[in-house]
Image 1 (cartoon, rainbow, N blue to C red):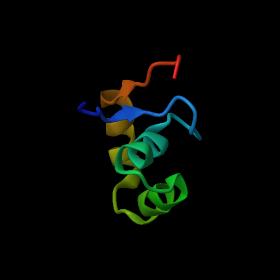
Image 2: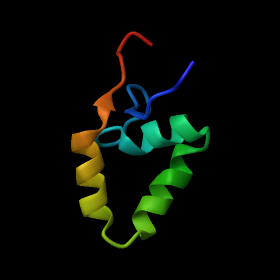
Image 3: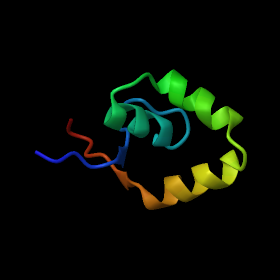
Length: 60
């Protein structure tokens, strides 16, 4: 079964982008959040991902 990169329904701080990336790659969401903190252009990348990633189903 193929997984899709989606925003997290359970691990959310703002929009669930970092939580979704962490769930997809099987890593800690704190690590992804720290990575976003130190990326250049992090606000723009986050906004683009928040608008382009699909929401995860709420029933999971």
